[in-house]
Length: 131
Image (cartoon, rainbow, N blue to C red):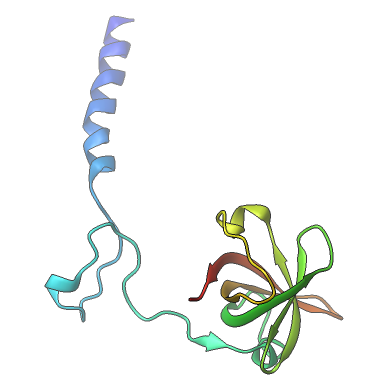
């Protein structure tokens, strides 16, 4: 029994150093002085799309849109508007990140296109107020 406890403790001690290291993707094109220190992705991001673009995109395509959330239509359902039209978006409470947004606040939303046979919406994963 003591051997099992000692072995388990040794495994935990050896593996914690691997978890303590910072990680993420480092873009080889970015100069070393500009690399991120907290980890994460460094490289090209998704370009801005429009509501009009979303209607022609495939299901599960990652999109980034800028515009306004005009109204709430259900529990997690909202109407998003940009200069090209309106679109239904689904935003779970956890993705507001403590922000309060009004129809006058310009926001950037990021999420996945969710297409059904007769509807298109975006399942939002991140909401950011643009100053």
